[in-house]
Length: 268
Image (tube, rainbow, N blue to C red):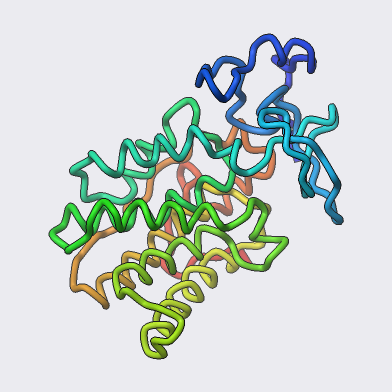
């Protein structure tokens, strides 16, 4: 496995000078992959470790950090990203879920990996539905974003359910207006998450939020067609982020340039 190029790595003191205060909204010195502060690869802990967030200062139980000791909590990690998701999804007229996803992810403040994807997936699904004529409101999209924020980073391995798959379930839940007492719709929502999770879990691979979000959207496309009758095809595209993703599975990924996409998916 190749290692990331950290030629731009900076020290903690340099990061203090470059990085923003969350109050001003400045965004210089933020890395799109690895540690937000210095760009080093993240280290995941088997057991949580008490750490103080670099930005807000809150002391929390962390499941990841970097070799320099930097830790950024989920709320600070996704703060600017949530604004990006809202700005795109509440104003776009696009019906293509992949175009919406790639528009959001192309923003320089949107990280390659992170819990913000758990909000992005349901927001993109609902936005595409709304723009296709489904009765979806901005409040529905905002609700989906907030529900997605409740899924922690690393849920794919720590909780056994990828947040992108849960995001598909969130979107279905909002379309059906499901609640815990509604047995029929509760089942449909859980089956939606199950189907998206099965697609993601068919790959023996480290996390890749782009790949897993795309797989969740593809499965959500079929699910929403069954529920609403709306056709929202999910197209493939050539990945351009692999140089910054040390866990890339390369030719085994359906988004790898030159890979012929299989509907069945998986690399086992």
